[in-house]
Image (tube, rainbow over all chains, first blue to last red; front, side, top):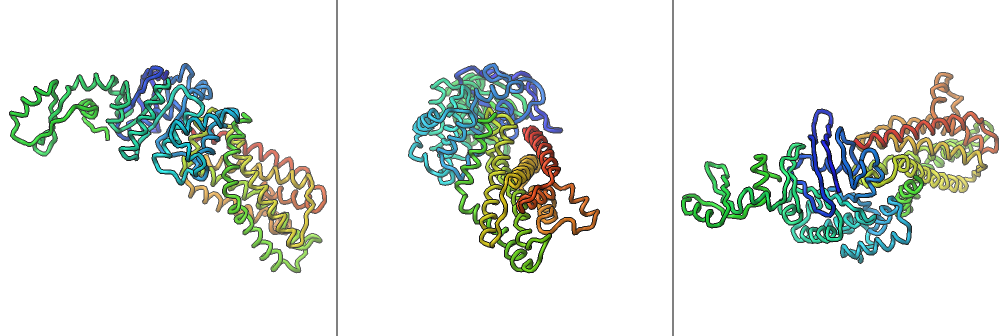
Length: 278
Length: 245
């Protein structure tokens, strides 16, 4: 369980997080969506102990991240946005060092690493140097590494950034499987479809503030199910409809070209902030 | 704390193991050039305090190398921090900051010891054998401890790899030449001697050289080195704490 209470972060004159309040339930996948610079990474950095908070409180499974940082860190695993593997070491060595940092006994380390590499379908790459792996494989190694100490909460900061569509979907399947095994997952992304596919609840973060929080289904139901995009004097105008029939009736009245599509979370974010997520 | 420290140290050892041939080659070049150019060629007929210049130079190179190699861990930390972001992996792990500091210091000291073994082997081929007694090694331990501690602190303070290089150019390199490694400090004017007395390397060179000639060094040098080491490890710990922001 993740609890954030009135969390604030200041970087000199920049107010990066503004009174963030959040309650993530055990076992759920929670997505934090927002454009670059919204404060998503700062949020993750604070709860994983990488950055100090300015005010407020953050708890991981009941442990205060500022007062009991070591206990809180044991509860979570982190997959940061940037690849932070030792390029000159092998897959096994990278995971082994992580296990040592979490004080796991030698025998348990070997078994756990083999199990996880098998789970991620990269057991055959155990002795390969990281620098010889593809981007997708490095991501899978990072996820495996974050799971070696069996954390209750997994933080994924833009887990599929820079990966092609096929590999992205493969990572999604892994994330779903991890959640099915009982791990709470908190992920940040600016891929709308990633949040729609994975998350049970979504929070929109904009300029350090949570502007909305709900399930993807509720968000989209509030907007409507269908959308029509049309160009009006060099601006893209979008109209939302509850049913396809309503949308079709609207189309009949149109003289200009248009696009009929399903509503997605991008529409919700656009309606809330006037900005696009990407 | 110990397990966390050993985990950090283990990582550095794994990297050293992978780079061992390159490291040995790199660590051999400078001392070899010094021995050939200054010791063998220029200092052929020079006597210093009753010893050949090669005999005088070799302990100086040991002191210099224990400083530069221990300090070189700063570059490794910087690369891990700025380019590979591996520092975040340590920060997010349940280990204390002092464990991290101690692990990196041990790694710096290990590098220093590797370079000293290489210098002693090279010295043997140049016909110079030093008395490697306890006081000789103790001075090396303290000197490498000081500069590895300084390296960890500096690596946390600098904002880029270029800043690190600048610190080396303005502090480490001048100290390497002026800290009694290549010439006796007492040949300089008194005011210069007083300034150089403030440098830990001057005390380390003096202690290492005296011990390597089979004599008993001045114990005050060891006390100064020890206190400097304690000061630097405290500073480096504070710098790692500060690096969270």
